Length: 205
Ligand SMILES: N[C@@H](CCC(=O)N[C@@H](CS)C(=O)NCC(=O)O)C(=O)O
Image (cartoon, rainbow, N blue to C red):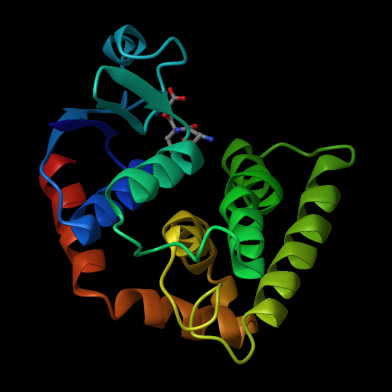
């Protein structure tokens, strides 16, 4: 049975959503952030040296990084769902979005969050993060025009990955400036299992 090492209030929720959509048997092993540092507890390092979540265990293998986990679970258990045909042009686009979520997209958004939390005056990082976040959000907004999901009309692994990014955008209030992103969030929220994942996140939080 698949084990998901889940940290409260984390990227791991996107993997719960995916596991629910895949309708596979899995166990959640819950960990809780330190309330002062917001870091994961040391026990997570016994599962993977970085001590971060999500991490899954399946068939004797430990897999970290939500992009790799998403790709693995869809390949193993998707039965043709949640990814375009392997030899198609869409598959290449799909891979691009799958990686984009945890690379180009998330960095400026996290930087902005950390700078705000820290409250310090910076030399250049605040301006950099602001400009980059604007660029990234305009790009996502523009790319979503005329599409229900990142890859046309099909919910794919790229959307599970992007859900965490879009939730952070929504928490910051920025969706009001990006109508396609707001519409896309509503599209993700139209899936029943998206809400199941929220409920499970709450239950284990
Ligand atoms: N790129 C990794 C990021 C993993 C990550 O940073 N997870 C955060 C939760 S969102 C974490 O475990 N933070 C606790 C810590 O660093 O102690 C992924 O996508 O899985």
